Amino acid sequence: MSQAREERITTNKEAIIPDTILDVQETSCCIVGGGPTGIVLALILARQGIQVTLLEAHKTFERDFRGDLIQAGAMEIMDELGLTEQLLAQVPHSKTSQMEFSLCGQTVSFANFSKLKTRHPYITIIPQVKLIEFLTESAKRYPNFQLIAGANVQQLIEKNGIITGVRYRRSGGWHEVRSQLTVAADGRFSPVRKLAGMELIETAAPMDLLWFRLPRHSNEPEGLRVRYGSKRVLVTYNTSDGNWQIAAVIPKGNYRQMQTEGIEALQQSIVEVVPEFGDRVHHLKDWKQTSLLSVQMGRLSQWYRPGLLLLGDAAHVMSPLGGVGITYAIQDAVTAANVLSEPLKRGEVELNHLAAVQRQREFAIKVIQGFQSFTQKRITAKAMQADNSLKLPIYLRLPLLSDLRARLFAFGAFPPHIKVKFSL
Ligand SMILES: Cc1cc2nc3c(=O)[nH]c(=O)nc-3n(C[C@H](O)[C@H](O)[C@H](O)COP(=O)(O)OP(=O)(O)OC[C@H]3O[C@@H](n4cnc5c(N)ncnc54)[C@H](O)[C@@H]3O)c2cc1C
Image (cartoon, rainbow, N blue to C red; front, side):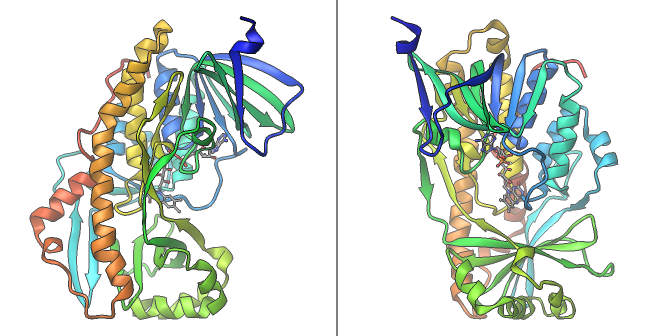
């Protein structure tokens, strides 16, 4: 059979079929997406001398607000990489050891991180962009790591049913990367997932989040708090640059209608929940100061196909509840590195290795998503419909459960640790 007949190119509808491929590169592992999943996997593989190419659609890591809550499970991985001290010295950050719920004048600890048995009994608040930039600089020290920024992957190359590489567009031209393994770490809307014909099983999340910032007075208490008001829920926490990062929970699809009602209506609803913000809510003047997060939750029933593995948000989109997305994504990368490093070095990545990655991570994902779904339906969705008469359920007030929730957010079930050996 001729090469042309064996090979199939899967392309998205919008992509123009290239007549010229400007260059073709060979690598062991091609990672699509330079988010937390992609960069941590690339770094661990590169440290072992494995040839790794990271393709990132954006030219820089600067982008909209993407969250900044890093749990202890991810910080322990920074310890294992020997990077924690350097990271915290270079990047401004803050910490909080409590996640609280406030309702009708009552405040309870929803998750108490201070009793966790770890070097990091708290959430580290660190801008995601800065974390990724820092990890990328660390990876660049290894000659077998290559980052191609501005590389927008639009096609998959398949040969005899096996994914053997990708094609990306950069500066108007087409390029190709051939690899033993392609990892899709391209986030919640994963173009690679669509190209591979894989579909998320989605769970309805009845809400969206509108993120924005307001100034914080230095004498105001620090911490992460979910504040319930009449038909409005706000999440607030202090950032390292002296502001409040705030998320307003809004009914799904309601953003357009809010815009029609005007920014003043949003300002007023903020003050109804947190009266202290009355003296600064005028800083929120324009919708451009807000970022909308369409809350989704779902996961793939199978995370792989021959030659292709999906990880992080591409395999399982997380609800923002608990601030676990970055941590669980980094843990996926660690499990993948533990399982796949030796087969990659030998050039023998088999389907059963890819299945092992899913098997080792799937239970933790199911548990956290089950918990997020329960909390969203039983508390947050109800609070958005109710007036001030909603009472905090008993299970939110038990200290033991607060400690257990902290463990779930911080580590998840069976948290992975780096098992491979590398030189620093
Ligand atoms: C507004 C917001 C707030 C959040 N807050 C938090 C929080 O506080 N704490 C927390 O833990 N989680 C938070 N999350 C979730 C968290 O950001 C994700 O769970 C996490 O980033 C997933 O990492 P990832 O590497 O799998 O995907 P992503 O971080 O989404 O990275 C995917 C990367 O792939 C790139 N890409 C996409 N398509 C292509 C393509 N075709 N070719 C090449 N590259 C491509 C993208 O540019 C991106 O850089 C938040 C998310 C949002 C949107």
